[in-house]
Amino acid sequence: MDRVSNLPDEVLCHILSFLTTKEAALTSILAKRWRNLVAFVPCLTIDDTVFLHPKEGKRDRQAIKQSFMNFVDRILALQIKFPLKRFSLNCFTVVDMDRLDGWIGNVLARGSVSDLDLQILIPSDKCVFYQLSPKCFECSTLVSLSIGSGIDVTLAAARVFLPMLKTLVLVWVKVCPDEFETLLHALPSLEELVLVRVIWKDRDVIVSSASVKTLTIYVGFWLFALSIDTPSLVHFEYSGLVASDYPVVNMGNLVDAQINFSEIHIKSLGEPDNDEDALRFSNVWKLFHGMRNVPHLSLLPDTLEGLSMCSESMPVFNNLKSLAIKSNTERGWQAMPALLRNCPHLETLVLQGLVHCVTDKCGDVSGCISREEKGLSLKLCPVKVMEIHGFQGTMKEMAMIKHFLDYFPCLKEMEVYAEENPTRPRNQRVLKMFELYNKLSSCNVQLFI
Image (tube, rainbow, N blue to C red; front, side):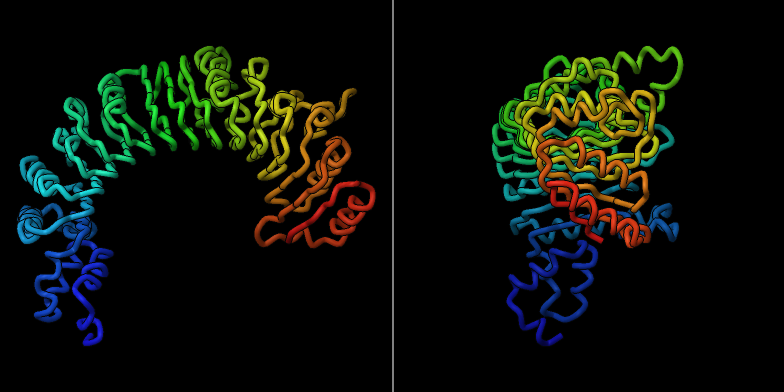
């Protein structure tokens, strides 16, 4: 303890910044040297679940709640004269709105906070959202703003002054699309935008920003139309439900994208007379058309199956160099032939698993079903490098590997990675087959166990 206590105040405060505020405050009982150090800590994390111990039933006791709020008041009062860089407020029990507003206002009024994280959930039998104060959108020093878990930001963006904001995260919050569009246009420095399960008060949404470089969208609720106008976007990740339409998709500088549609749509596609979901996927090509210049693309199983609904409208990916596909035993490869034919400059193909659902529409990529024009899609694809992950060593997988070696005309390297704790890949028969493939093919085939 003596060695630690002899460290400079700056070092001790840096150490305390990694603790919750409650834990940092408890260090004041260690010695006189520690008594007021919490006042200098540049990062505060207020979490009522840590303070109230909900698993012990304490959060239901009014005296405990009052004690927590008094504790936060004291900490903020103690720190009022010192700069604060990061403030995290997680409240899932406190219902005193004025108190919450006061804490947030106290922090922003200091003019030093650069990172603000708010997670506020009002305990109620009804779905009641905390109305966020407009003060959160008027801060000249804020660089990162994260808002989530039951907050309503409607009207909060009426007056926006966040000239330094680079990262905006919205998770399960209520937002008016018109106000959201106004908000984005008022953020000149925004580089990263995360939208997860946002509750839009209208089902037509426009994500428009000239500066955003990284965009993450998880669509958790139905949307009629989703437009994405982000000309500077470099990294894009989309998951969740499919919108009915994608009127505008502008991603001219995109470098990599990962698309993961929700299995809810895919399962319902097989139901009879399901015209609504079929219509949704008939417009998915518009989303991919806006990404047609991307060099690196990753598709998950439900996405690949969904693309089969719009294979005829699939754009040509002239710049695509690397394509990653994740397979699933319940999802087919119907879209693979059209996808590979539309990648005229593809160099690397990564398959996370070879096992997929075999149907009469599986196409000629896998060779699962005998066809007159066997492997035609592969013959037209210039892939040079293949990576296969999750290899289990089955004869079916070996047959597919042989199929790829036979029909990919430009293939030079194939790397096969066994799944964790494999048993079959060590089978001597499998190993000998790999040796044979190397002898009969001009491709260098390697098995990594």
